[in-house]
Image (cartoon, rainbow, N blue to C red):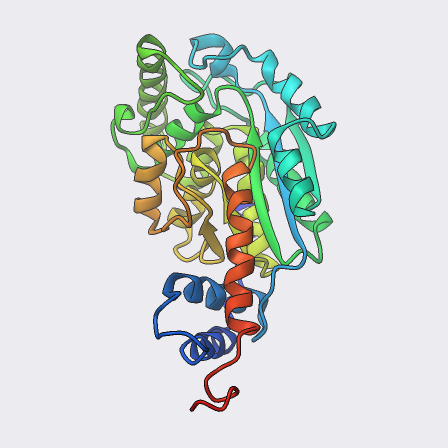
Length: 332
């Protein structure tokens, strides 16, 4: 059994009593019934996983994993050269990248984890992205990152890796065994010829992997990337610790889709922070039953879209917990 498979055993369930208590309070606070219905749902979800009738976002943390992809150098599936991954890792480490600026503004710690920069995965068109040992190593990096975040009340996962929307599309297309063209977009700015190369690469991966397996976790190893595996491990570990998670874009969502297929309910502690401009992201969110909190046609990664949604989750909790009920205000 792989490490990721083992993380999906004996998962804790949400605190139904806390969820129901917050939902009941939301129905009686000083505003018209249903006026903030979606936010009330978010507050109750947060309560269920924080296991408290007073949910709050006081200690959010962000974790960004970075890695390189063999398919990017071999198949021309990105508008940027692979060396950009290392440069962006440096910018994240030094506080100069978008996610670093956002987390600073939000007062959130940012943990940047190198799981394979300048150590690309295999060319997923013709070989497994990772062997068993490297896959487990990446998953463990995700577990360890969440362990370092002990005390967080909300986690945001992000990624950086040139070519990783190709890996995301390969995981999704292979997982659901659907044509690559349905899952491939322009990523960070591909032209039509680049998109065609991307579709060809993803289709080659799907044909290769589906010929040997339909197992969701094995598909993650064969078709994904080191940062995707780390995210999957981190999200699974967050579930084991009952820490709620905000998802970022296509790559992060594709990273955890195998968890949902392998173990229905495994991502119940997750909300979609946003829906990106990638057509595959919309398709994948619908497949997973996740409704995004915002939609701004973003296409960056780094956790940026989920970071924008953090204040929404915080305000959702405040708008239930800190608002008086009609009875408390003497109006019942």
